Amino acid sequence: MKMNESNKRCVFILTLVLMMMMMIHAPMRVSASKSPEAFVQSVVYSNKITIFSKSYCPYCRRAKHIFSELKEQPYVVELDLRDDGYKIQDVLLELVGRRTVPQIFVNGKHIGGADDLGVAVRNGVLQDLLSTS
Image (cartoon, rainbow, N blue to C red):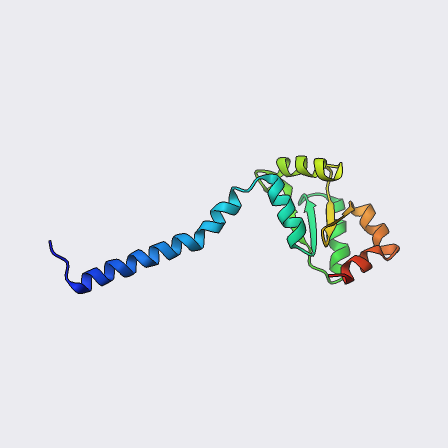
């Protein structure tokens, strides 16, 4: 079967569209395959505030509430809702010496847990860190 010019054009356009769709979706596949170490580094350094949390944890809720009162929106990683949550906790243990939650970072600096966050609010350290962004 011979293709006329119109059919050739359609095949060419469809090929281009498919290639573009593959290129658009490629980063999602790459980011999904990131190591837990790369994921933690990426999240900590690409967000103003990052909280590694568990959805049921009262200390995590307290930390999120503190940021809510400050009208700040943290990027929250709910470890119990991720298949690789335990691996991320292992990375946190290597990075900050703790695998407990929450673990809070502001502008790439490790604050600590909920109690540490409360201290940072009271002594003005958190406000200083937030104002440097």
